Length: 72
Image (cartoon, rainbow, N blue to C red; front, side, top):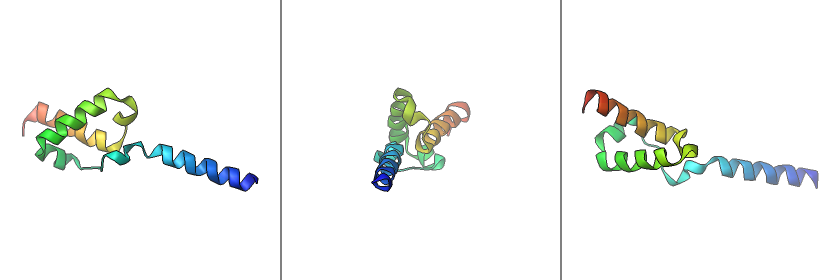
């Protein structure tokens, strides 16, 4: 019984960690080339602190920062 509880709890924790599953991870370069997607993702990331730390958000935010600072 205890093993089943541990396995179930582990699965629940792992599934909760994948909050970014709705957004496939894109690279920073990809976001630099896709303006509409970058703007939409940056808006989502800035609106949700939990998503902001996800790799996909970091790539979108980094791409936006680079374009803002240096242009395309």
